[in-house]
Image 1 (tube, one colour):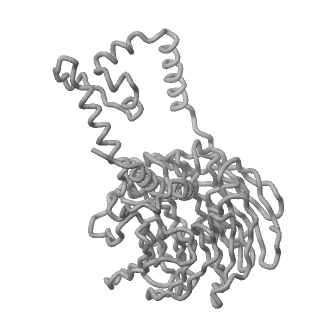
Image 2 (image 1 turned 90 degrees about the vertical axis):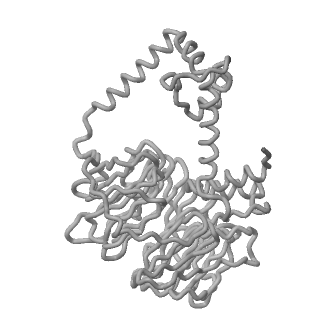
Image 3 (image 1 turned 60 degrees about the vertical axis):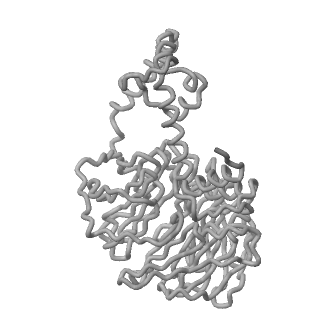
Length: 471
């Protein structure tokens, strides 16, 4: 058996991409020169690193189930191994029986420490929740019948992003196979949007990182690792290629009028593009590290967030930000204006989400009840029959629903077993979909509990405008 450092680097790089660590993957790819290797990425299956580790772990389990005299231990004597167990010297060279003998000689202080930890865990599990925080643990979810599920097959690698067209039953998707695709639910053939080599790019990688429709659904924007933003019509014809960024484009948003496209990239800049002319309207270099997300407040003002922990609010025609929000202690992953564009929500790897107002420089609410990184957030739609809510999705495996006026956690939704990477409200605000690394999709009734729990292969969610279809 032989393998090269290039092969190891490529598989690690793919693992980072699959796990959603896009800027980490970019940095690792640049330093390890992954894109200069001759490896055909389309031949590497999703989850390759995890698959190899699992096979290695199984081998170690087999190895430790055989005693030194060649006898196979009884199944009851074989202890399941964690990855850390498999990497320890003792486990690699001794059987479970020998390991068990060693464990029996633990010092009293070690045993006491374990008891103390167990007691603390039990106390935490039996503690009463906050009065306003309803911990929803789904019990009686209904499976969805297979005849109501459509699987869209065609991408040759991971699908990073998707979005419904606001005017037609068309889904746009973006993948690491260097294509975006348009899926029409009337049975028409899929339209492939190839991201050909960009002569102005400093990177040969053309993974599609983001897709975004304009307001009337006539144009689709795609962002790529090659640093270009591309604009397509809904029949798949390329209209414009926008070259200015010096690295991957991670975020794209149309303004409400649809005449400007906003992009944010690893090169630490945001750019407002005049779509009709295909030219830069204004270039902003206000962050100290890669820009992760952007969002328009209206037609002329927008917010951007970065790994530099800061949020900048900018206005066309102004060279300096009109507001800078500081307070996060780690990478800011997402920024989103509420439907009225009066409140700005953000979430971070510092385990908090925050709500900001342009009337003051510090946050008006610090939402700090998650116990791990918060990957994304979503506002419910403006609706006279349901209250405005903010949903937060975290690596702590939960989704929380917040009332933004008082900053109170109304519900904690518990069903997922791994980090939650995506959430989407139905247009009427009554349903919430969540997608997790555990490969499951949950659909929740916001006022009650889980109504569906089913397996999925991805973590990117988008709901149609009428709320009837989910992708």
